[in-house]
Image (cartoon, helix red, strand yellow):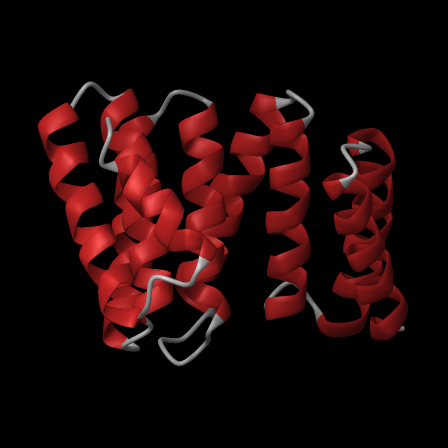
Length: 178
């Protein structure tokens, strides 16, 4: 059932947070065909599972498989997720992280900027500032320090606007020290 597939996905993400990537990937590899059988590949739950598996592969150092899934997930998310789907920006950010882990900062920046633009359309200031924070890292790693610094200031400005009592504000403040 779909509930079973989603439960496997959630358990896998718990294991991933515990840095138990091997078991997490095994559960996600088991969850994907279950979810696919119930809802098909053209469904947000399947895309989430695929994106999660890509992130687990990345964390486990299997960058080739992570990149392959990120590319497939990117193609599917563009077709599948509409602009009113709140999971869209998160999916783009996950894909950006996979590209960045492979040293492909141009693709990472491209995906994270899409996530930022989507969050901006939705007026989701926390997600906007988080995307800007990710962009700071990607720009800095790509050697574009002045762009990274300006982006960090933008992220900090958004967090200042929504309140300094968020854990993300401290990270935004830290990002300006690049």
